[in-house]
Structure formats: structure tokens, C-alpha cells
Image 1 (tube, rainbow, N blue to C red):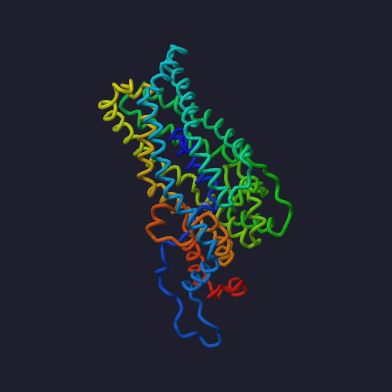
Image 2 (cartoon, protein in one colour):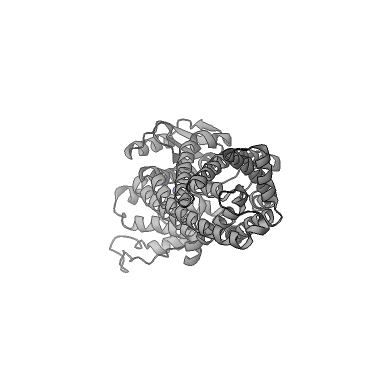
Length: 450
Ligand SMILES: [Zn+2]
């Protein structure tokens, strides 16, 4: 799946960023607190120590130490290497298909099976997706099963995991074949401007996935049941009403089936809108922590982050298509004879398109991470304002640190983090708290560590 088709992978990434966008994914320091210190050094008469948000951040971060910290750092830093490994592996698979003329043979088979140029594309694409998925399977097993299991993040047996992979492959096969068939049809009609039309098709496909994902795709992997009545459920629905979110129920997802990761979600449009929280969040977090996470998720909905992600990513897609178009011409001039691929409307050239797109998205990792991370920061700030639980937000961020390094260097966060780091998020919360110290609910709330 890492590989199948860069289009599908990127779509999946974008969509999962938009849909899953749980607090879940990154934790580290980034924007190191440089803001002004609000409190005077002399404590006001009659109070204890003044609240120092920077000290509170450090005290929170110090709660996760020793083996737990080393483990999550190692897990997350290993991910940096895997970004490069995935890209190199994908390019190597493309090279193999081209130089051994496997791609040309798959195209020849498609031509024998159908005279229609329209139908040759999907016949080729199905073979391509099957072959690349198989060739990439060893790496997928290592990354997504073995490594997760070794770090204690996997709750599935190998067979259960493989079953989910099979479902995912089925979806990729259908979605990838439709999208790539449409793109090839466009290439044949608009030989100069196909990259623009291709961008349009990719963006429409992305929007479609965002629309149907929560309602039709996610239930293929997990069960959604209405959350039983509880004070927490009432608070969640109250926060939703207060922020204009038309939801009348909250769903519980059995995410512990796959892993222990904490997550929640507000997704969908109009009739498909749903608020869901996963069972890990419900069982591992306090009600206030769950509410803090839901506040963040509501931010994605209210701030219309689907549109933001779609627009920003469409710019990235347009650049990718333009690069791929340019690179394809150069590479086929040099090697087209050896590969038996001459023109861009030949499906046998798909591995070239994929290799170039892989290179593009590898190099633009910091850009796509910025698109996601800046969106997540907005949702964090919305959540703090909406539910006013800065300390619960800080502690639930610590609970996310099993799979995201809490305290990275600023450059690390800028390049590798698709969500803000733990340090950044706790800083957001303590910075917010420092400006609300005299509000009655904050005064009556928990003390931050110092
Ligand atoms: Zn989010």
C-alpha cells in the first residue's frame, strides 16, 4: 500500500490527514516558547508562586522520561529513515518494471485483450497495482506489522492485519483503476494540458474520498456504535451545539481492534456528519481529556479544514503533475528505447510517472507536513478556546507520546511532523492558560505542575 500508486498513496495521506486528524500523530517541541512571560518575577501579594507557562511545559514534558521517552523517540526517529527507504524502494520497483520490460509486457497483454485504447488502460493498471503491491509487500509487512508489533503498538494478529490489508488493496484497486483510467483518457485527449486536467481529477477524487470515507470506508475496518449516555456524551453534544455542529449523536469506534492509539474524529458533510471517538480515547483518557481532544476535532469541522487541505494540496498536486510531465519527456528521450515506452499516453509509462511523483513528494515532505501541521495547530487553538481545558489537553498530549517524539529540535519538527510536537502543543495550552488565569473556571481547575 505504501507503494501501489503514488496518486492513491498521496490521496490516502491527504484524506487520512483530513479525516483522522486526531491529535494523534506527532509530538515534539517546535516553536520553542519564546513568547513574552506574562507574569512578573515578584509574586503578587496573597498568591503562591506566579504561573510560569514555560516552566509548566517543562514540568509536563518531564513526566514522560526514561525508557518510555527513549522508546517513543526511537520509534518516531525510525520513521524519518523510513520516508527515504519507502521512496527509494518505490523508485527501485519502477526501475525494475521498466528495465526488465515487465511494464511493456503488461501493456502488450492489455493490447491483446482489448483493441479499445480506453480499456487497455484499466487492464494495464490492474496488473500494475497487483504486481507493485506484491513487490512492496515485504516492506509493508516490516513497516506496518512487524515494526508496530515490536514497539508494542499492534493489537492484531498477522492474519487479522493481513485481512485489513486485503480490504485496503481491494479499495485501492477499484479507486486507483478508476482514477488512472480517467487520467489516461485525459492524456490522450489533451496532450499538452493533461497535467492540469490530471490535477483536477486528483482533487475531485480526494474530495470524493473525504466525503465517503467516514461513512462507507471506515466501517469496513471498524465497528461504530452509539456512545452510551454519560455526562461526557452530554458535554460533547453541548460543545457541538455551541459551535454550530449539526450532530445529534456520538459514536464509539473499536479502534483497539488495530492498535492502542488514541484518536477521535468529526467528519462528513450535511447528512453524513458524525462525531466519533475511539475506545482507546475513552478508556485511557479522563473525561476532560476526551473533551479536549473532541474540541480539537470540532475545530477541524468548524474551520472547514477539508476545504483548506483540498485547496493547499491541489497546489502541491499541480506542481507534482507539472514536474512529472517535464521529467517523463526527459527520461523517455534517454531510455525510452530500452524500456519500450515512448509516449506519455502509453500505460507502460506508468512506472515512470510513479517514480517521478515519488521523487517529487519525497522532496516536498516538509511542504506537505507544513500543510497538515499548520491546520492541526489551528484546530488545537480552536479546541482550547471551545472547551477551556488546557491542563487536560496537556496531559492527553503526553498520552499520545507513545508514537510521536515529544521534544524534537525545531528543524525536526519543521521537516518531519505532520502534527505539532508534544512540546508545541503543551506550550499552546500553557500559553492559553497564562492569559486566562483569572477566569473562574480556570481558577477552579487543576493546578499545572511547575
Ligand atoms: Zn487534528
